Length: 180
Image 1 (cartoon, one colour):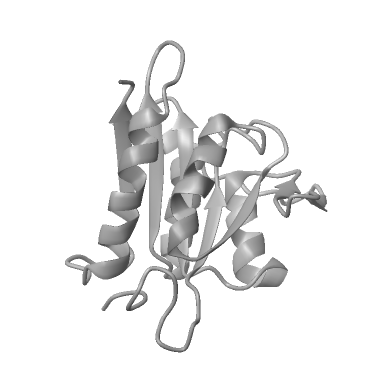
Image 2 (cartoon, rainbow, N blue to C red):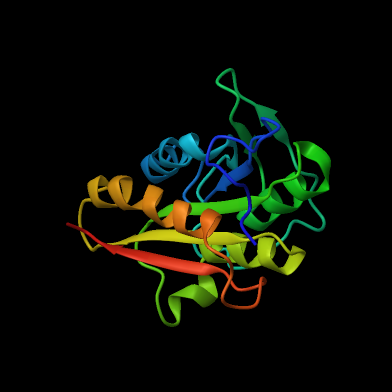
Protein backbone atom coordinates (compact mmCIF):
# COMPACT_ATOMS: atom_id res chain seq x y z
CA UNK A 1 0.00 0.00 0.00
CA UNK A 2 1.53 3.30 -1.09
CA UNK A 3 1.44 6.24 1.28
CA UNK A 4 0.10 8.58 -1.44
CA UNK A 5 -0.63 8.12 -5.16
CA UNK A 6 1.58 11.07 -6.13
CA UNK A 7 4.54 12.80 -4.45
CA UNK A 8 2.91 16.26 -4.12
CA UNK A 9 -0.55 15.15 -3.09
CA UNK A 10 -3.31 12.70 -3.81
CA UNK A 11 -6.29 13.21 -6.10
CA UNK A 12 -7.89 15.40 -3.42
CA UNK A 13 -4.77 17.55 -3.09
CA UNK A 14 -3.86 16.21 0.37
CA UNK A 15 -0.12 16.37 0.99
CA UNK A 16 1.90 13.73 2.77
CA UNK A 17 2.78 14.93 6.30
CA UNK A 18 6.54 14.46 6.78
CA UNK A 19 8.40 14.96 10.06
CA UNK A 20 12.13 15.71 9.95
CA UNK A 21 14.27 15.34 13.09
CA UNK A 22 17.83 14.44 14.10
CA UNK A 23 20.20 14.17 17.05
CA UNK A 24 22.76 16.75 15.86
CA UNK A 25 20.51 19.70 16.67
CA UNK A 26 18.41 22.29 14.89
CA UNK A 27 21.42 24.05 13.35
CA UNK A 28 22.99 20.93 11.82
CA UNK A 29 23.80 20.97 8.11
CA UNK A 30 22.49 17.42 7.66
CA UNK A 31 19.06 18.43 8.97
CA UNK A 32 18.79 21.20 6.37
CA UNK A 33 19.90 18.81 3.61
CA UNK A 34 17.21 16.31 4.61
CA UNK A 35 14.46 18.94 4.82
CA UNK A 36 15.29 20.21 1.31
CA UNK A 37 15.40 16.66 -0.09
CA UNK A 38 12.00 15.81 1.41
CA UNK A 39 10.21 19.03 0.38
CA UNK A 40 9.03 17.79 -3.04
CA UNK A 41 7.17 14.89 -1.41
CA UNK A 42 4.80 16.67 0.93
CA UNK A 43 4.41 19.10 3.80
CA UNK A 44 7.67 19.06 5.76
CA UNK A 45 7.72 19.87 9.46
CA UNK A 46 11.08 20.13 11.22
CA UNK A 47 11.10 19.38 14.95
CA UNK A 48 14.59 18.83 16.32
CA UNK A 49 16.55 19.21 19.54
CA UNK A 50 17.75 22.77 20.18
CA UNK A 51 21.17 21.38 21.11
CA UNK A 52 23.14 18.35 20.03
CA UNK A 53 21.80 15.09 21.45
CA UNK A 54 24.26 12.64 19.86
CA UNK A 55 24.38 9.26 21.61
CA UNK A 56 21.13 10.02 23.44
CA UNK A 57 19.82 6.63 22.34
CA UNK A 58 16.08 6.18 22.97
CA UNK A 59 15.97 8.53 25.97
CA UNK A 60 12.88 10.57 26.78
CA UNK A 61 12.54 13.51 29.15
CA UNK A 62 10.62 12.33 32.20
CA UNK A 63 11.44 14.74 35.01
CA UNK A 64 12.37 17.85 33.08
CA UNK A 65 9.69 19.99 31.42
CA UNK A 66 10.21 20.33 27.68
CA UNK A 67 10.58 23.79 26.16
CA UNK A 68 9.21 24.07 22.62
CA UNK A 69 10.13 27.09 20.49
CA UNK A 70 8.81 27.79 17.01
CA UNK A 71 11.39 29.68 14.95
CA UNK A 72 10.49 32.47 12.49
CA UNK A 73 11.28 30.06 9.63
CA UNK A 74 8.71 27.55 10.99
CA UNK A 75 11.19 25.02 12.37
CA UNK A 76 10.55 23.90 15.93
CA UNK A 77 13.30 23.53 18.52
CA UNK A 78 12.81 21.28 21.54
CA UNK A 79 14.86 21.18 24.74
CA UNK A 80 14.74 17.38 24.67
CA UNK A 81 15.83 14.31 22.76
CA UNK A 82 15.02 13.13 19.21
CA UNK A 83 12.53 10.66 20.69
CA UNK A 84 10.85 13.55 22.53
CA UNK A 85 10.56 15.35 19.18
CA UNK A 86 8.80 12.38 17.56
CA UNK A 87 6.46 11.94 20.52
CA UNK A 88 5.51 15.63 20.49
CA UNK A 89 4.71 15.43 16.78
CA UNK A 90 2.67 12.24 17.18
CA UNK A 91 0.71 13.66 20.09
CA UNK A 92 -0.67 16.79 18.47
CA UNK A 93 2.02 19.48 18.35
CA UNK A 94 1.69 19.40 14.54
CA UNK A 95 -0.49 17.50 12.06
CA UNK A 96 0.25 13.80 12.61
CA UNK A 97 3.22 12.68 10.49
CA UNK A 98 2.73 9.91 7.94
CA UNK A 99 6.46 9.53 7.33
CA UNK A 100 9.35 10.28 9.70
CA UNK A 101 12.83 11.07 8.38
CA UNK A 102 15.74 11.38 10.79
CA UNK A 103 19.20 12.79 10.02
CA UNK A 104 21.26 13.31 8.05
CA UNK A 105 23.46 12.28 10.96
CA UNK A 106 26.99 13.66 11.11
CA UNK A 107 28.63 10.22 11.43
CA UNK A 108 27.75 6.63 10.64
CA UNK A 109 25.13 4.53 12.40
CA UNK A 110 26.00 0.90 11.78
CA UNK A 111 26.45 -2.13 14.00
CA UNK A 112 26.58 -1.25 17.69
CA UNK A 113 26.30 2.48 16.83
CA UNK A 114 22.56 2.13 16.29
CA UNK A 115 22.12 1.22 19.95
CA UNK A 116 23.34 4.67 21.01
CA UNK A 117 22.10 6.83 18.15
CA UNK A 118 19.38 9.39 18.78
CA UNK A 119 18.94 9.63 15.00
CA UNK A 120 18.12 5.93 14.73
CA UNK A 121 16.05 6.00 17.94
CA UNK A 122 13.76 8.65 16.41
CA UNK A 123 13.07 6.33 13.46
CA UNK A 124 12.50 3.39 15.80
CA UNK A 125 10.03 5.43 17.90
CA UNK A 126 8.03 6.31 14.79
CA UNK A 127 7.79 2.68 13.72
CA UNK A 128 6.76 1.61 17.22
CA UNK A 129 3.83 4.01 16.79
CA UNK A 130 3.11 2.58 13.34
CA UNK A 131 4.56 5.32 11.12
CA UNK A 132 7.14 4.45 8.42
CA UNK A 133 10.57 5.92 9.09
CA UNK A 134 14.05 6.24 7.63
CA UNK A 135 17.25 7.19 9.47
CA UNK A 136 20.00 8.73 7.29
CA UNK A 137 23.69 9.09 8.21
CA UNK A 138 27.00 10.02 6.55
CA UNK A 139 29.91 7.75 7.47
CA UNK A 140 32.97 9.90 8.05
CA UNK A 141 35.92 10.60 10.28
CA UNK A 142 36.61 14.04 8.80
CA UNK A 143 34.65 16.90 7.25
CA UNK A 144 31.16 15.90 6.17
CA UNK A 145 30.10 15.89 2.55
CA UNK A 146 26.37 15.99 1.95
CA UNK A 147 26.38 16.00 -1.87
CA UNK A 148 25.70 12.27 -2.23
CA UNK A 149 22.91 12.24 0.36
CA UNK A 150 21.30 15.29 -1.26
CA UNK A 151 21.20 13.44 -4.59
CA UNK A 152 20.16 10.01 -3.30
CA UNK A 153 17.71 10.77 -0.50
CA UNK A 154 14.89 11.78 -2.89
CA UNK A 155 15.20 8.40 -4.67
CA UNK A 156 14.98 6.56 -1.37
CA UNK A 157 11.99 8.60 -0.18
CA UNK A 158 10.21 7.99 -3.49
CA UNK A 159 10.81 4.25 -3.18
CA UNK A 160 9.36 4.14 0.34
CA UNK A 161 6.35 6.26 -0.65
CA UNK A 162 5.50 4.51 -3.90
CA UNK A 163 6.47 0.90 -3.24
CA UNK A 164 4.21 -1.49 -1.40
CA UNK A 165 5.83 -2.68 1.81
CA UNK A 166 7.55 -6.02 1.48
CA UNK A 167 8.25 -6.30 5.19
CA UNK A 168 6.46 -5.69 8.44
CA UNK A 169 5.17 -2.07 8.45
CA UNK A 170 7.03 -1.55 11.72
CA UNK A 171 10.36 -2.04 9.96
CA UNK A 172 12.44 1.12 9.58
CA UNK A 173 15.21 1.86 7.13
CA UNK A 174 18.70 2.77 8.35
CA UNK A 175 20.66 4.30 5.44
CA UNK A 176 24.38 5.11 5.71
CA UNK A 177 26.11 7.07 2.94
CA UNK A 178 29.85 6.97 2.33
CA UNK A 179 31.50 10.38 2.64
CA UNK A 180 32.22 10.95 -1.06
